[in-house]
Length: 283
Image (tube, rainbow, N blue to C red; front, side, top):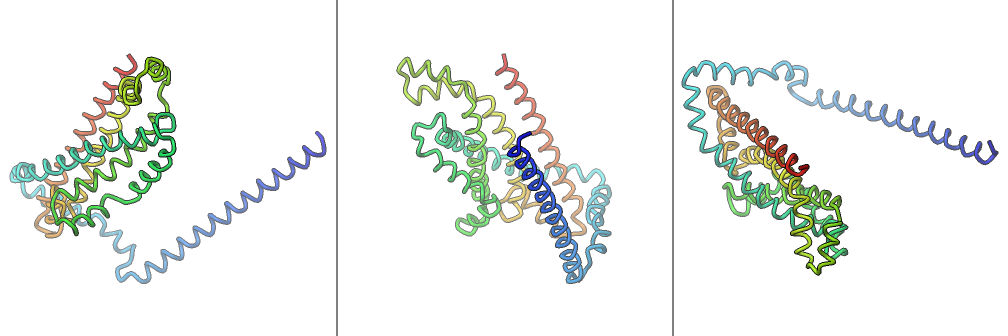
């Protein structure tokens, strides 16, 4: 081994030891901050974290007990809250559809290999990053302040975030397409729109639909959460029943049961459709 190689190896070993020392020091510092921060927060808290932790399952236990005490009267509650669930699913469905359409447009403009204007690629990537930076809850609160409490703010907020999230995923799919069909269409004199329509869409459509279905499942949960801030749907009913506390456990349990079985059903249907689309694409 030459002197230069030996010196380089020694320098790498020294740098590796220094990196490990910095890593250990950072972990110790972070653990110390967490430990002393927890102690300070626990001291300032009038309750005490340990005391609250022992009561963690008290309220869920009350919900289950009251649901069993309701007996057969529990099942009519499922029917009573069904319209609120349908409203939540409708919010998620419309938001997913609008978000997917917006995501498709932005994905073609943000893909390096497909954008008709390459200088727009970083612009649309930054735009999508900016849109994803705002949670649906913040957007919905702002819109509720502007246009009032209704399902419309929830739909706009979820669609806004969905278009950016799906746009990023769709753009990554676009950047991995096979360019041979595109070049063949270009050689035949096809326009950019025709190349995207006949050369790209057939390749990426299964993945687009798969991501959109996955996002629909996520949006159902997001729409339910937005109901807590006045956006309507099943979340608004949950806010009411949970706010009542003891005595409304049967209604709260019915709402949770409806939401749980709906999300499970959507997940199963989405998984089935994704498998069918994947199998069709492979054939």
